[in-house]
Length: 300
Image 1 (cartoon, helix red, strand yellow):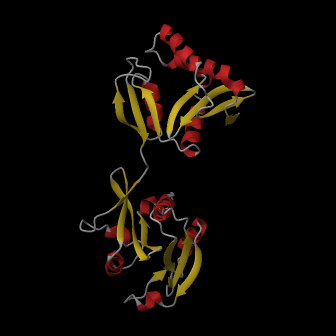
Image 2 (cartoon, one colour):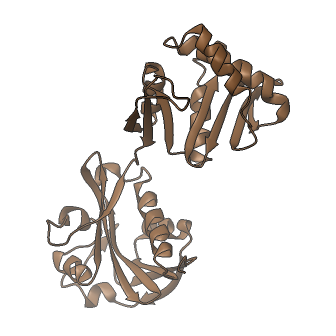
Image 3 (cartoon, helix red, strand yellow):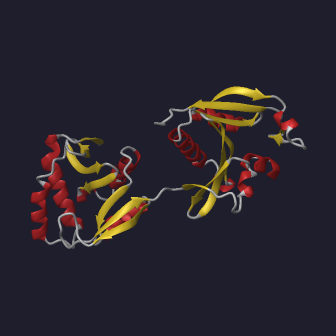
């Protein structure tokens, strides 16, 4: 079984899959209406947008169509329902084709449940479908797993989180001075935070980055870092830097994996700038390791 780009030889089988699927799932549509709609489907130019077919031994089991960021079609032969093939198509649409929206008939309850399972939520409703028929359409959008927002520093600062990445409020407040505070929310709960600080015109630094302990090791740190990299590039910065302690091997490995390289060492940073000794993994930390990443600036 493989998922391959549409070829003209798949056309008749795709139309057959569409018809079988609609007759099996769209019980709110009359048989005569399906016949009429089939004539419209036959006129679709499947080369005008991205279409992938799920093939097994030259047989089309299902297909997926995406235009821009919208899933325009996702149909599966009803004989193969329950084998997670629909999930295979959806995962490909989201992860490989970057689809974030889908339109679905309001009466198609099972389809709504299916898309909701992947995190899609309704953001608009229309009274008629694209053909002007009285079949209300729900426009659904993929809700991000986490929302990353620039925070107002005059509001309550999430010190409980930031103290996971620094030892004192004084150090955090120093970073907040002329720094930008960001928070990440999941289901309206703040689960992470970080501070960015412009060092010079083309360089920006991550001063603190922390994920709540119960969600550490689940990929949220990578999501935050990807956001920081993308937003820094979009703002025109050419270099992103971050400092961590000489005994913070896990953090150093994390940044290296993301593409950072070690550029410098600030000797005795944690001795000169902190009143009390700080320990990591039973060892006193002394030096700051400075890592750097060159960015693909998107400034005009």
